[in-house]
Image (tube, rainbow, N blue to C red; front, side, top):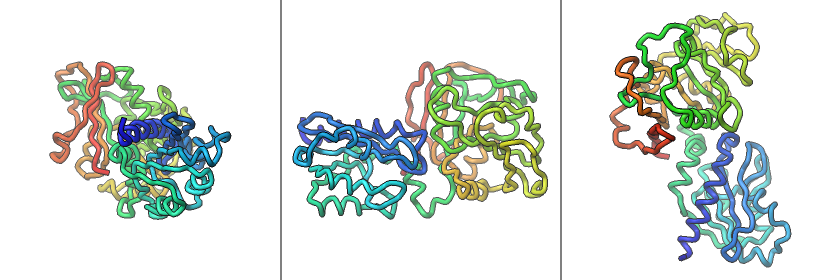
Amino acid sequence: MESLEKDTVWMARAIELAELGSAHTLPNPMVGCVIVLDGVLIGEGFHEQFGGAHAEVNAFAQIPEYTRKQLQNATAYINLEPCNCFGKTPPCVDLLISRNIGRVVCAMKDPNPNVCGKGFERLRTAGIDIVVGVLEKEARILNRKFIALQNTLFTRPYVTLKWAQSIDGYIDPEMNAQKGRGSIPITSMHTQKVVHQLRANNKAILVGRNTVEVDNPSLSVRHAEGTNPTRLIIDPQLELDYSTLNMIREQGETWVLCDKEKQKETLKIENVKVLPWLTSNPEDWLKKLRSEGIHSILVEGGAATLQNFLDSDCYDDIEIFISNKELNTGLKAPKLPQTTHGKFTEMHVGVDLRKQYIRQC
């Protein structure tokens, strides 16, 4: 294979490794590192959790026996520019320089203004050969949340809208489901596992009051790897009976968004926090959630809640899971904006179809 083809193969592996940290790294990026010598992989690692060792550290930890002379002929493949400043861990450029790596191939520049090209500059000054831009599109899609959060004009959390629907466009077989009816699954267990991983990959999951009343969901990640996200409930008048909710018995916190006039009312239930922030524009209270450490939100419904986010243009990704079942009647799926038409990527999840829309990184 030509050099570029080889670089592409090893970078694909670095991106694959990086994604293993998807449920644990935000607001840090997902990063993987692969070290190759004479065409053979000798070490690899990824950033496993926020505040933990970076990918380069974990990769080099696998090869302590390799000398500086040997590593002068080795290449490190990293999907993001190595950091050049102290954060929760020391700069990775120092490690690369100290181990005398001969070549570094990166997918993209780090959008963090504290890094943004400075890591590459230090490596070049140390005499290390640098290649940038291998599988850059794939790397940017992988770290799209991190990229958005680095933009000073992006002041809300990263928002993903998700729903399941029948092949004929209904999200529920009943137009007005009764309180306590319970959830009626439309898609398969394969899709449920994917959705639970989406939950694990976000800091919070949001639903409206009606969804809670009808389904009484747990909003957990029991079918995926990761921790339960913070549950966010839109309950303007604090009408729900929180002592009966399944989610209260799950690990993690539940935050309730209500109208300002409910500010003096409190719910005296453990792990439930009342936030009197609701306004007609989601952008207003989303910014406040971001200031509270909610960097990303998965919005799961119901139909009115999802439509409000779409109509307010407060979304970044859309995930639609389509069953092969026909319902013929019921509650219609949200109406998509014209700007999304023709821009969905399709893939199969078992017998279901997954349609994914990602705004430009």
